Amino acid sequence: MSWVTKTLSSTIGRKLIMALTGLFLILFLTGHVAGNLQLFNNDGGEAFNIYAHFMTTNPAVKLLSYLTYISIIGHVIFSIWLTKRNKAARPIGYGVSTPPSTTVSSRNMGILGTFILIFIVVHMQTFWYQMHWGEIPFVTYDGVEYKDLFSVVAFTFQNVFMVIGYVIAMVLLAFHLSHGFASAFQTLGLNHAKYSPAIVLIGKIYCIVVSILFASMPVYIYFTQS
Amino acid sequence: MKLTLKIWRQKNASDKGGFVTYPIDGISADMSFLEMMDVLNEELAIKGQDPVHFDHDCREGICGMCSLYINGHPHGPQQTTTCQLHMRSFSDGDTITIEPWRAKAFPVMKDLVVDRGAFDRIIQAGGYVNVNTGGVPDANEIPIPKRVADEAFDSATCIGCGACVAACKNASAMLFTSAKISQLAMLPQGQVERMSRAEKMVAQMDDEGFGACTNTGACEAECPKGISLTNIARMNREYYSASLKSENV
Image (cartoon, rainbow over all chains, first blue to last red):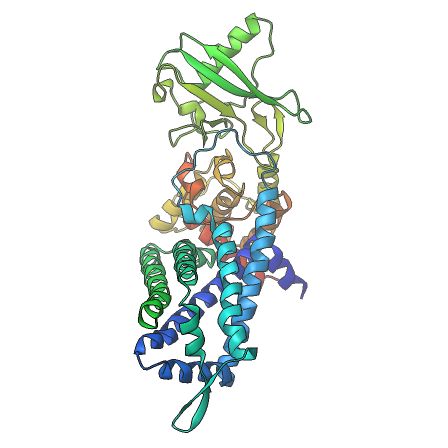
């Protein structure tokens, strides 16, 4: 295994882990946002609750969820490992440093990521923990009992500060993804005159669409469930 | 032109160092930046003071010896080497801050002089072709497509000045190392050592204490030779494929 650990602990190897976990989390976000669109169903949460039940009980989804946890933890650990090295590479900074023609996102991936991590912790405590181990009321559809996660969602987003917090977190996510999406492909070595401009464009569209969809959920709940 | 220079002065590698301000007058807009430094040093020498030490050699923009972080940019405001930067890029009355490259792998030796031996050691690790080249071969004896030759040449234009490291927020040497790996990986002569080269040069780059890449593109924007980020993607590909396929267990 020595060549594997040697490769993965090199600067390029650590970035490879960042790119692979990042891309997997992008896939996860795509599924997450698509599934949660059922919050807009206006059926008192029936479709959403059935979907939430499926997501917490299906074995294939379980496997994917473990991969997601591993990706989040891996992404965080390797980013800390990389950032420590990167900071150490310039112990004395410049007296004058004008930021060159780089994007705000690309220069602040660590800070954006830290805020997103804080958001994930709060988010998982609010919904994921409640769904698994919290006390959630039950509802019955067609004679089958389901946990009424929708009522938790509806209750949570009665709090305007929660709504604002979620919207801000999604703006930060958009910035993080606006660099992360294309950057992951570059790290994988996928840089081509034909495809790279398309990857950059898709990344920009992706980060805007996903963030707007996610951010609109608490806003929608706030205005429809009061 | 009348200017105020804020220059980093540092006696030796272990000195803490600091900025010293020098007013300077009578600078022509047609002077190169280094000629302006020469004028300052002449004045300092006449006053019996230690002149400002800085690296330079060809002054033609081809050797990669000059450095200087000028007003927040490696090689100053133009995308060129410091020796090819002219005082017409500045205005009368400007304050110009001049600093050495900042990186753990580029220790400051004196004033604005840094030790870029780390780059030499990266080259020594594998940036060569280890075959007897013999005499001058006939033209077109080894067929190389024009596009490939052009691309390899674009990578080979890297003069190893270290502006990429100086510009990078992580002091990463990936643009330099990737250009040196690329120029040989694309040509037939470089195939024999292709895998070991990628492994050894990346390992040496890491050993020297350079940071990793965040794909911000600051290096590409500041490189006086316009080395592109496609080199870094190529280096990554070379490194992954070498790690998977080489006999180095």
